[in-house]
Image (cartoon, rainbow, N blue to C red; front, side, top):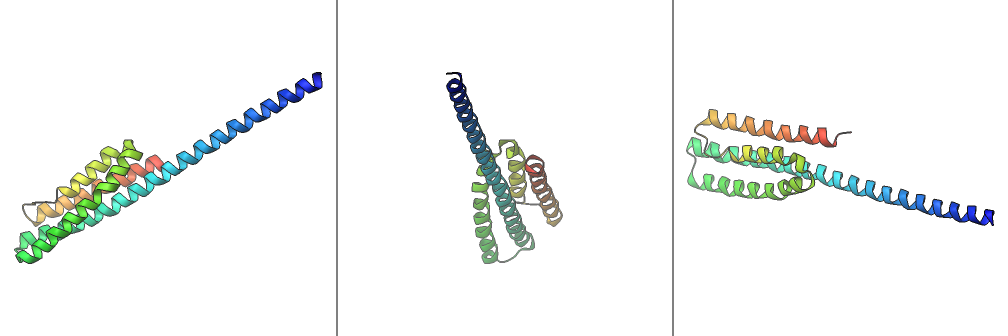
Length: 147
């Protein structure tokens, strides 16, 4: 009788431990997947921000140098496309890594702020600020997700 009782208790303890380990493994896997998705979103956002900065630089440089209306309009169309490309990764970063949302939003806003620069010096300053904001986002992500 005692042997049977010990066997039953051992079986129950083993089952409980196995269930606990399985739950912990599943949670770790979910956390790792979420982390990986957030890192990918930050990378996608950084790339989209770089594309938009470049497009805005070209657009505003054309405006400031008095380029043809056709050239400016083509650059404007491109900048609209690159701005739209920021939306999805910005949203993903904000959802998956809310702690990074302020840095992500600041980096996006800094890229948007290249619009309507008063002169080339202001455009360069705005671009440098946008690059610094994007670098700040990447640094914040590295601190949050780095090994």
